[in-house]
Image 1: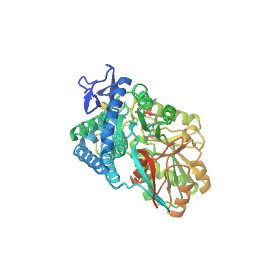
Image 2: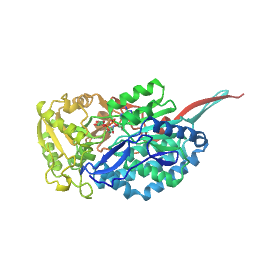
Image 3: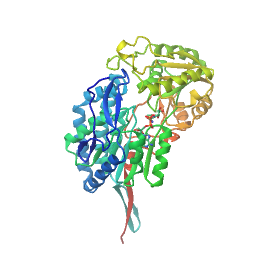
Image 4: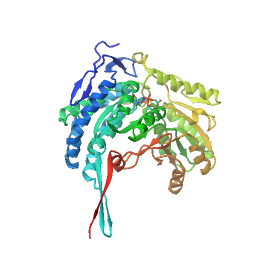
Length: 485
Ligand code: TXE
């Protein structure tokens, strides 16, 4: 254990503060188990202070024009961009993900979220609706103090996705990042302090869901809640928010199907399906972890797919050639590994992986490792095929007809995403529309356009974020009807 791990502080009213209570939480590197930071285990006293700061900053911040707030978002983007390599290194250290992924996805997207929403806020125009003798002017007012609660899999990527539109539309925010990955939220607070953003507009409180998240959601002065995390936690957050009639956006778990038709171009489909299954060690809510393959190509697909998975480079996250790193925590690794045992009890066969990866160097002996794992032979309604595992495990299933593929894809409680692989684009569109989810990609996966709606149905959440959907969520539309002659 490192004795000199830094102690991170809360950021409230423009300054860094220790927690009112003197309890601390340890933050460990997933790849090595090493202690890398300590964070305050904040409680309702800290939350009260942060919400009070956000509340008192609200009137002046809300009174700025869209253009003035867009300039602040651009300044934050510029300052983050200067620290892009720091973001990548901290994110890779804190989550165990490969540095190449942290550079290409986490660091880049965190900057582009601020730039994108600066542009969106600048270009935002409210509707008017003419009547014969009156004009309706729709006015978008800030909603108030927003609680932004984020998970550990894409820490700054998801936090910036919420902070940018929230403050861009004139709200002030209190952020509660995952206690497992606090490093880049702290970096964002440093960057925001450097830019001189007015005090109280952005506040950050570290701590657990129980001691910091729950009092934030329940606080009377919080009017909006944007939450990304597990489905069970989402239900608790939703129940608490409902009592105060708060505006709520929930981005929750997923169990997404990847549907491969016999006419798909295998050269691009195999790497696409591997990426969908294993990106970020399978710890993305959009990952395609149940792979449905048309029976006529099942054996051939399986052989090529297994070959690609077996050749993935697993190991040191700081090596630019690494494709798969460590899982977030020992508890999570054990939960994920438990599904491998369950799969065998349910009649499945582990055809690749199934345990710790081979050849992990000694310095990573205390990390949370699991080899990419493929399971065949399970029924499509087994627990392993329908529950969110959130790790490097995929299941393979044959299907015979378009309708059967759609029915299997719809046979889970989740409805977040999916992908369809075929050279017949009409069929791709038709099958995509048959799936009860918020998003489906055809011949690609996680090909993101920030303007489009993002979110799920069923147990995957409530509401949409992205582009104008985010701007709508982070504001209250009112109508002013002006009668004229
Ligand atoms: O998420 P939690 P965890 C899924 C995945 C994973 C499971 C649990 O299946 O195994 O969720 O992960 C805060 N009131 N996803 O434990 O607990 C918590 O501190 C307010 C899917 O990390 O939902 C953290 O900041 N806040 C997901 C955030 O909620 C509370 C990505 C998420 O934590 C709270 C991550 C409470 N009562 C995990 N309890 C995705 N959809 O991308 C906890 N929190």
